[in-house]
Image (cartoon, rainbow, N blue to C red; front, side, top):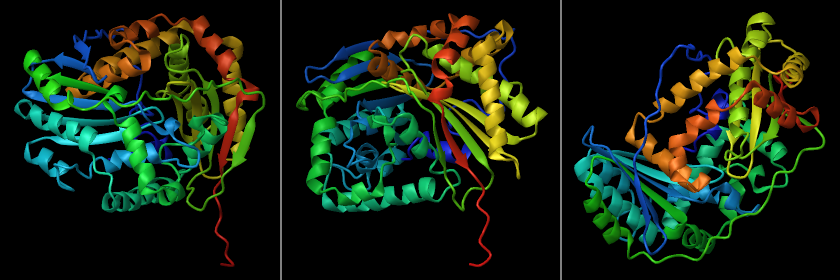
Length: 455
């Protein structure tokens, strides 16, 4: 179970789920239609929200269980708990022996995984349709009888610390998002990343881990989605049998904060021997993904950095040959977000040159906006991206849970394209003026550290 988004960003320009750095936007004439996802949803008396999406095109089924707890729910002196539990929940339960969950699912012809972010932790299974009961049983066991005991905690402590060493501490640009989050989200629970600090996992007691489990791994903090080939009424009975007896937990206290406009820029140099090429990151605060102007921010990022014909690739890589790669990432969360640019310079390129070009290109968008043709190009690409995200039952299940939890409206999934399609060139420029301000810039420099010949 690997932490998504963060380690992938550090190694390869962030967000493995994003479109490829060199992927060209779809041509203007591309005809793509968004599918309509039908679903049934309801609540169990204990607060578990259930969403069922029946699709009999193949004899497979996916389950997706989202717990509304991520790193922003942690204490500043106990970071990494949400991610730690992503691992710990595979230790077993009172009725499942340690190390058996993977084996049970594999023997049934399925696969599984889990992930953690700032806002949520999720678990998913893909199985033959006749094995749905296995997934429901395992998830109900973990919710009611999850094992939080010394041997499992000590085992996963070492696993999580090794993951941090490999993906953050010793990887090229591995500390990038950690430093970026600390600057962009300073003063909020988003300022630490889900991987957490190894020292806090070491310092935490068994009682603290158990408290976290009993507080957040409760049915009224969870959304269960089943997608695929099944009978709806039969599955409702299974879910009631497996999850109905689980007691409702206490009401969850959510962190309350708002990202305020940044009034002064920040800059930090990170000099590490693992840096292979000079790199510059410019990042700004951005809106929550539910904000009205969030689609404009996402499309602005695509205009700036998606594909070989994007503005920054054209200027930095092709014309000036100052960079070997450039990526622009909008990372929009439940209570705020960031839009950032990660430019990897060619050998010998001064970081000041990367900064100058990035500043100039951002100023052009603020001052002059974008063309209707540019906008249509990235809209076509976005439509194809959204449509392709429905290709698997797992993705459908994930999207249904996401829109229920983050938007408070599951059916908003069926209207997401309309939000992007309504964006105008004027809205793109307004987003650039509002968010990509000089005083709101957070700059990270990763210089190449030359070895010391005296050592």
